Structures are given as C-alpha cells and as structure tokens.
Amino acid sequence: MTTHLCQVARHWIAAAALCLVAGASTAAPHYHLSLQTDGYAGTGWLDLQFNPGFDAAPATAVLSNFSGMLGSEPAQEEGGVSGALPGTLAFVNSTPFNDVFQSIQLGGVFEFDLDLTGSSSVFSVGLYGADMMTALGNPDPFTNSLAVFNLGQDNEIADPQRVSVASRSDVPEPASPWLLAVALGALGCVRRRC
Image (spheres, rainbow, N blue to C red):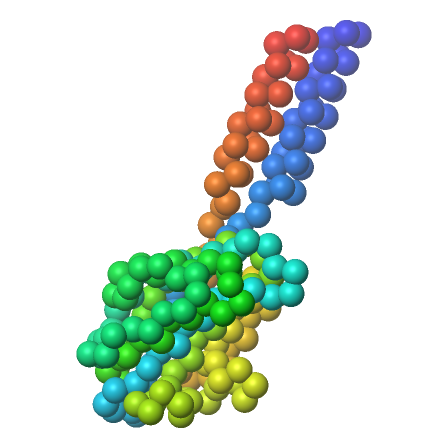
C-alpha cells in the first residue's frame, strides 16, 4: 500500500511541477523584420522607438543583425538607448521616449532581428524623407509608424507592402530552465524518500 501511495505521490508531484514550469515560463518574442524602401531614392530616416505603456514594468528591445545602407548623417538618439547601427541597439523603457533616428540610403531593403522582453511597452518602426518630417509609405495616421509591436498585445503592421515579418519565434525566458531544475529536484527528493 505504501509503495502505491508513493507512486501516486510521484505522479502528482511530476504533474504539478510540469504545470508550474509551463505556467511560469514565458517566451520572449523574436522577430526577423524586412523593410522595403524601393520606389524611393536619396537620403531618408529610419525611426526606431521603444516606449513604455501605462503602468509599464521594466522591458527591453534588442535590435541586431542589421543589414542595409546607412546614410552619412550621424544617428540621433534619445532616452534609454545604447549601441549603434549596423551593430546591436539595446532599448530600455526607462524613460517616456526612447528613440533612434538613423539616416539611411533609400531604394533598398533593410533587415534586422528584434527581441522583446517584458510587458506593456511598444516598439515601432517609422520611415521619413530627407526633410525628417515627411512620413514615407502608408503609415498609421496616428503614430506615423509602419509597424508597431506591442508587448502583451497584438502587433500592427500598418503598411504590409513596406514592412514584413519574415519570421517570428518564441525564445524561452532564462528563468524557465531554473524552474525546470527546481521541479526536477523536488521530484527527485520525493522519489528518493519513497
């Protein structure tokens, strides 16, 4: 009878541990974005913003693997941004406005990877002409963004002819392996006692 109870207890603990890990582990979205600027020529400006929503917890956006022709004008950065294109840019939602305004050569394709972690923040991509004021493409009339990626909500591609998401995958948060290790350790302790 005791052996049977131990087996039942092991199964219940294993099920509970897996539920704990599945419920507590969240995945950070990873995107590969492509921005088409064909039909335009000369200098333009790429506007990349990562701003907190209301009641936002700490969040980050990391832009990497950038490809495309940068312009000769230096980038303008504001807020919680570190790094420089074509290298890695890291945004934090520590201030109300976190922005990189990067000069580019229009007429080609720009691609990059975007990794988002946290919640209640918004990453947006905009495209402007040489005057830094004229929005290019078919942006959202309210935000002038071609694409908006909302942490914890649906994404919005305002101009799918200009911006496409080549791939999206969920990357497990670093805490997930630790939760699994704790759950397996608890299971091992119960199994040893029975």
